[in-house]
Image 1 (tube, helix red, strand yellow):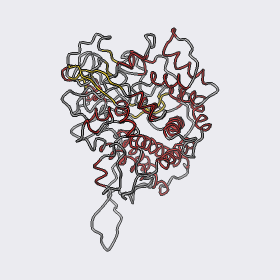
Image 2 (image 1 turned 120 degrees about the vertical axis):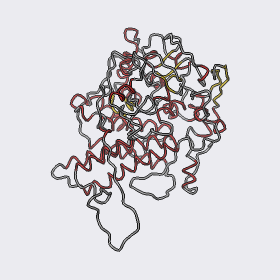
Image 3 (image 1 turned 90 degrees about the horizontal axis):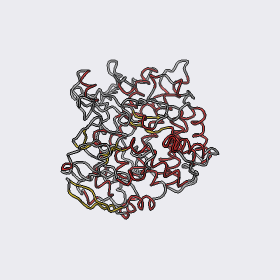
Image 4 (image 1 turned 180 degrees about the vertical axis):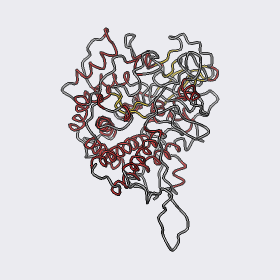
Length: 535
């Protein structure tokens, strides 16, 4: 049975409101923003609330990992043949595909800012906590909260480009910030986290703290943010905060001192690819992941499951060990063909209906059917045909089902990513790092390939396919590069009928690869927020 994790505990802080009286009094029976945050235990509870906010980011709207794949050249929008065309609008960067979807990402916008609000509240109250003699605890909690805030802002600024920047609790109606200011804040938060979190190795990290931010997670994310910002915005450094040499040094520190490493078999990273040999969550390759559990419950409203996983399962069809889902992110056959037959990542990453002799019989209900689905992230069933997650929930007597009880963690950063980022930034050990990733993939069929920018980027596609990374790797090479790579005219099956699908490079160029600001938010701001070009 799965363990519970840090996200299970949620603290609700109630803010009193009402008519002003002639006498302001402090409540002695209710926790408020004014009287809370006095002890380290209360600060810890608030920190748990920050993690809970991150866990709930994609409980509504379009999950960032799913959207990131839909934007890329590796999958199509998919979903049911009778569904709306919101996923096709994302896939084709064309608002004309679903004109009514003017606020497709509204739930995302709301959830991100809710979670950032929690972080800002905690960060603003740390000075009023009585820390006693443990002076390091304050810095640790601040580092974790600042990392989480940076992580969320990085998602948001990539998705929308132009967003309000809030670093303290506020209900003010403020305009969108210059992206450079957002990235400067992200960089500052991550540098603070890297400097104030303990250099505890993976082997020495207590099991109970798995899922919490580490020094190594902060240093790794600095590398990712650096590569994206300097690439997309064509800048020499990360918003004047982190240089190329510093970004590489952070990554080299992770490699040399974190104790993280590659899991020996690539397939063992993914539960559906290695049912009997899964390396488990929090394995040594996982540097940071968003944690989920199966304890979601319709009755209580508990909502800590991976609610987006069901979106990418085979459309209303299951075949052991794969559970049913809603058929989003049908995999482009070009990705399947990009792997060589000796690359073990091919069958570990992608479900091939024909290759695995799966008797899929629901093409009539599947849009943009290709014969391939995601394997790295997919719902699962047991040999009795029961949803694995729903069975776990039922054992606890919860009112749940396969839609809300999925518990596969989302791995944000793997050690393999650190190796390839360091190689890309020009490490003296670039060839060795590059070889390590490829040796695992090919095993006895490995032959050395010279390390180069082009080869690294191609390797990243194969290594991180379907993990929400590919699109951003394309976009950081330039909007025109991304547009050219993603654009295509091909044939898919919609409800079993051959249909021509076109993704136009001009649409991606027009939008600069960004998504629409939710119309609901523009309206609520009375026009203070401005829509992105092309939407």
